[in-house]
Every structure is written in C-alpha cells, then in structure tokens.
Length: 119
Image (cartoon, rainbow, N blue to C red; front, side, top):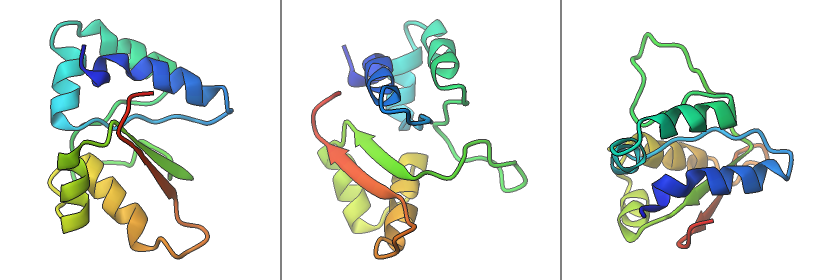
C-alpha cells in the first residue's frame, strides 16, 4: 500500500501533540490516495478540518490553509529531496518546502523535518 494511503496514521499521531494539521500531497500521492477509494480524501479532510491540497491555487484564489509553524515531509523520497536541493518548484509540496527554507535562519520561519520512513 502506498504511504499516501496511510496518511491518516501520521495525522492522528501528530494530533496527539495538539498540532493543527494541514495536508499537502504531491500529484502522485494525491492520485494514490484517491484513485481506488475516493472517500479516503473526504476522511482526510474531516480528520484535519482543512482542504487537502495537491496543486497550486489560482493567483486570484484565497489561501485556505494557515501559515505553518513546522513542515513535516513524510515520506521524503530521493526525488523530492533532489528537487528541493536543486531549487525546483514544480509541485505545491516542493514549493512549500523551498519557501519555508528560504528564510531558515529566521527564528519565525517554519522548521522542516524530513523522514524517509512513513509515520
């Protein structure tokens, strides 16, 4: 089973820390999370209380997610890490990671944690 199909496990784990969770998925992870069981997406939205984003919003669109205090990249694949390190911003997830790390020296910038194993 692809890790994206187990996102609820990691969300519930971090909610025990009293974190407000928002979920952004790569296009592939979104497809894996919804292709066989479209109801899974509704469950993730209900669990987080926020829309699950997987693509950029329109420039005229409203930001629907709060600014993060931290970012957790699970499952950070070699592809994701390479794109992030090389400065690519071809997906919402990579762009979010890049934006958060641009001001990494700032005490108010979100902190980023990468893991190569599913939660």
